[in-house]
Image (cartoon, rainbow, N blue to C red; front, side):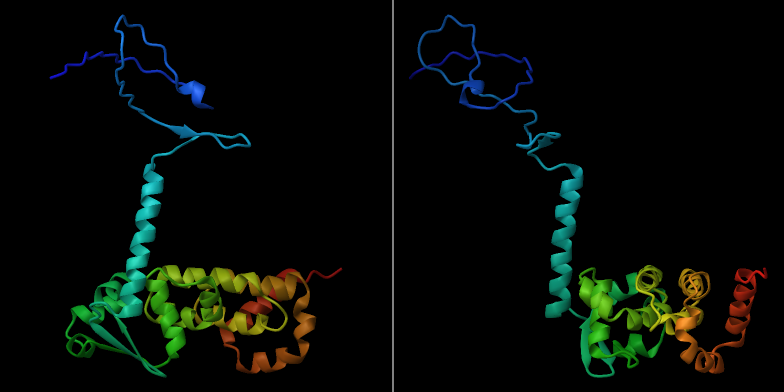
Length: 251
């Protein structure tokens, strides 16, 4: 049986390791022969080649949270795509989709009410969303499950806005409003103004009025403005008139 000497050294050193020579530590010992030293790295950081702040090779709390979020989203995506333990059927204008009561209830107080109270949705485990296409409804589910793609959101944002208003999904409604503000132009400004009034979107309404009046784009839609006034809500027309008075200042 062989016995080996044990050397205890509890010192903590910070050291920059750039090549193999930097891994050599002198040891003050009279022992002759071969022995093994265990080194514990309390933290090990990597510096970028081009300079900058060092980052630990071990996951931080933020990194762990990000990894956990990605894992959760992959699971939710599988639940939706593969219908894993789906317990509710959704009838759209063009077909059927499967979902999960818990996800829908957690995302919308309207859906939650359907499954809590003695309504037909609770008894039949079926939701009628026949005012949406199957593709738009799938985009809605993808949003609620956290897996929607940007291009799908952009494509179906008007349908998503209607669903957000109907089912009281506040964060989706806010996202749609912000998106609709991004690409106001002469071809859609009157329709956007009507949608802003219909769904009570004050930021979008102000954005449309600013585009028409402050930027003087109302002349670009003069051919459509008469038809718009014929169908517009009376209070909306009054508000537009007040905006015109506020902008127009006689010389």
